[in-house]
Structures are given as structure tokens and as C-alpha cells.
Image 1 (cartoon, rainbow, N blue to C red):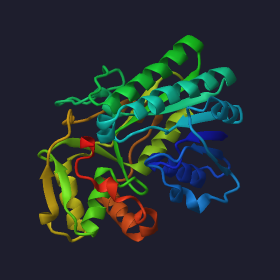
Image 2: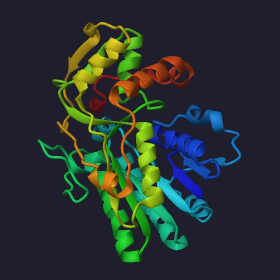
Image 3: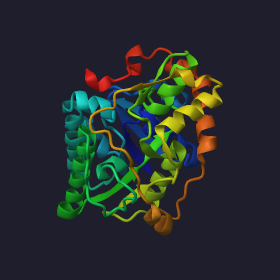
Length: 328
């Protein structure tokens, strides 16, 4: 099988490429990445000379490049996205270009060349939930500009399946964590600030709940959907690890033997959803997937990876550690 992976230098995309080549060494992968904010070429340094791996620098909005690469592959898996919610509040325009226009560009090539398309989406399309967990048929209710663009992309994908009979799939994941995540996100940001004994910002009360999914579990789920998922369907991917942000931060500080005095409560971001939750019964019952990495093991693996791989993060801009980036 030959895969075109878009956004492969990002967090989930890079882990997916490494995980796939490890478990399916005969697969061929083309990685199309524009090198935008959140990408890190060092993530895939170890396979730069792999016989079944090719890197192409380019943008999913470039229809000529996309069309050429789609014609050479069997399936496109789209990880490419602007994904930092705080920055979508400061400026939504890049999110519309990448997360909607970019998906449209890929879909046009998928339709033309009759290839398979898997769109990577998010639990944020369902918005904040009180007690229930969203199933695949749950109503869209996005709160942030980022989440709205991802919901729009899902509707575009579905429309191409219904109208043009395109072979499409959608997967939605809960909060991912693990190696190679850009340090503007909660877990790597916390542990790197703690390493340097700098204050760790906590939005609002810190009680916002997220379901934490280890990135290789997510990769396994994507592969299950790719191999066995039904065309036109969507699949929720969740692990059942609902933990609030404050508990996460305290856990990291404990692992690193750092004082909780490093914590600093700051203003909450506008429209900050309190709780995301999805059930993955469909994925588990129909495709037989289940998560393997519990949070205790996953968070220790994550902390150790960052501490043992300073080359990956030490040259990143200090601006990623801003306490309230949406105020730009």
C-alpha cells in the first residue's frame, strides 16, 4: 500500500509514519508537509534515508502538488491542520485556509483520481459536554474557530462521499499526548517549563476535563479504520482517561520532583470548553480496537522522552511558552 500522509512532520502525523513503517515495513509513505508552525523535521530524522519513505515540502492548498501526489498513492491520510486553539482565537484566517480550503483541495484530487481519503478530526467538533459522551451521530457544536473549521471539514468530506461517491473515512480523537508534541500544548509545555524552573500557567481553575489518549494508541486506531473501516463512516477514538488539567500538571511535577509552587493561575481563554468526551464503542465493537497504554505509563514515557531528547526542542522559540497566547 502506498500512503500520502499530509502534515507528517507534526505531532500525530510523525508518530503515525514511524508507527506504520515499524508495523508495516512494506508500506510506502510520501510525507507532504509545508513546515508551518508546529512542524518539526527532527521528528522523522531517523527515517530520512528509509527506502519506503519520501518527504515532499509543500502545502495542501497547492492543487498542482496535491494532484500530482494523490495520483501516485492509494490512500491519503490528512493530518495537516492548524490546530492550536489559542491562536485560532487571535487570528482565525490561517485555520480557514488550512483546515477547510486545504481539505477541499485534497478532496478534488481524490474525486478526480478515485482514491481513498481518511480525514483526521477532533472531539472538539462536539463542543463542551456536561455528563454524556458523544457518539458518532452527536450534533456538531463547536466553540472555537479551530473546532468550527474541523466541523466544516467533516461536512465537506461527508458531502463528497454522498455526492460523488468518494471513498472517505473520518476519525475523531480525544486529547493526544506522547513524544514529539509541539511544546505549546499542555503536557510538553508544562514539563519543559518545570525543567527550567519557570512558572507554569494554569487557565482559570484548571478543572477543565479532557480524555487523554496516548499517541501510539491513536495510530493503531487509525490503522484499524484504514484497513477495516466502512466507507462513508466516522469513528470516535477515546481511551476513557478523563483527567483535569490541574491533576495533569501536578502529576508531571511529581514525576520530575518539582515543587507545585511553580504553578501559576492565569486568565482563562475565551470560550474555553469545560469538558470533552466521546465514546468509542463503535470502533471497539466493529473493528476490535482498544487502547493499550494506561495514563500512568504514558505520562512517564512522555516525560522521559522529552528529557532524553533535548535536541528536538532546545532550539524552539521562547514565544511558545507564552502564558496567554490568545491575547496577541
